[in-house]
Structures are given as C-alpha cells and as structure tokens.
Length: 299
Ligand SMILES: [Fe+2]
Image (cartoon, rainbow, N blue to C red):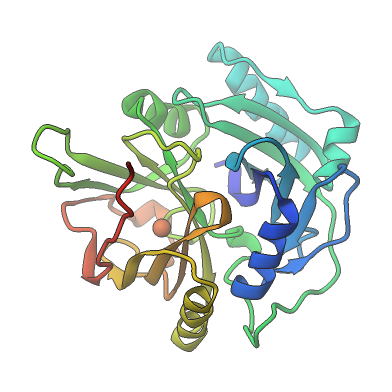
C-alpha cells in the first residue's frame, strides 16, 4: 500500500491567527515557523515541520488532507494510477511544495469533490513538546490522526479510495436516519499503511465546512479530561459528550472548533498490528457508551 498516513491538513480561515490561538490554548498545538505562504499559520503537534496549515481566505472551511507516500517512486506510481483512471492530476509547483515543507505534492478531487493531496519527502522538523503538560500526541508514522469527510457520492468515493489509492476497509457503519424521511446514515472507515484503526471515514451526507470532523489523539484519559475543561472554558459548543466508540474503541468527545470545524479529541484508539489477518467489520452501533449528541438547531 502506498499511502502511509494523513500527514497534514489544510484549512481556510478568515482569521488564521484566531484558529492558531485556539489550537494552542485549547488543544496544546504549537505554532511553527512559516514555510513561506503569505498569511498562513502553520501548527505543530509533533516533530513534523507542521501538521495543520491554516490559510487566510474568505471562508471558514476545510480545504484538503495531505497523505504521505514513502518514496518518489511510489508517488509517481500513484500519479500514474490516477491518470490511468482518467482523474485530473494537478502537480504542485516547487514554490507550493516549499510551502508544505515537502519534496513534491500533487492534488486530485475524489468523486464527492473533496481535495486530496499526496506528497513525499517531508522535511524533518525540530523536536516539539505540546502545551498544557500533554506528554505527546499519538502521531509519528500513524499520521496526525484521522478525519471523516462528506461523501454524498458514497459508492464512487469508496471505490476511489480503495481501488485507486489502496486504502483498506476497517468498518462499514450504518446508523438510523436523523428523520423518518431521510436515508440511513453510513460511515465507511478506512485504514492506510499504519496501525491506526482508521485514517479516513466517509459519511454519506454533505457538510458546508467540507469536513465532518478531524481527530487528535492523546495518550491518557486525564489529558483528554483536561482538554474537555479547556474546551468548556473557551465556550466552544460540545456536540458529543464523552463516550467510547464501538469500532476503534476510542474514548473521546466532539466540539466545534472556530469556523465551525468539527473536532474530536480522544485517547485509547485501537491499533491493528497486522492488517493481513484483519477481518473488516460491519457495525450498526457507533458507541459502547456515551457520545450523547447535541447539534445546535439551525434556522
Ligand atoms: Fe472520529
């Protein structure tokens, strides 16, 4: 499998400095040095040069996830695969690659319209310790965490990630519809070439921010609890109380970060040592306990 992990995320914010302040004050991320893009804030979680790139723009939204590929050879093979599947590939310029602190990157759209970047040759960063006494985030070769993206074109999007990008299925979750007249909810969880139970989830509904949620993982319940206190103190809306997921067994809570970006903070996520002997699951229950949802009523 060519895709190693989710290496970076790009957001667009009207006020990147506000998102950076939130990430430092609430999550314990750090601000990185600039890699040259005007107005962009770069945020760190670990020794990688950065994990979040917050661009200045006219909207608050998710722009792209960047997947790490181990070598130039595999990177070129992945581009070939896109081209053979008649997918338009944008090859990043040298300057754009420098902005991402990588050797090279390319971007495509998945069938639901999400922007997907692939890259190789990431520069090494200085050592980094998170704020608020957090020992470390669960990152490294497992990437920055996971994300769930809107995928209204569900079947085509699943096929794109499985057949063209080489993701493997971890769990196919079906949940009851929000209302009787609506279709069931489905979240299709996939892994890349690392032990994290899922690096990507696809949800069968659209979302105006371009992302359902992003997840950062800590190494203790206390660190998650302290973060929950900071989220409350910051007055951010918690849309799922503390709970444990059934599929990856993660204990977590969810809230809206600035710009309305769904964010999950958790710990104890399941890791699979050998994907070859893993049997993908089909679930109808999202949680073992907790995760009581509280979505603000719109309109
Ligand atoms: Fe999640």
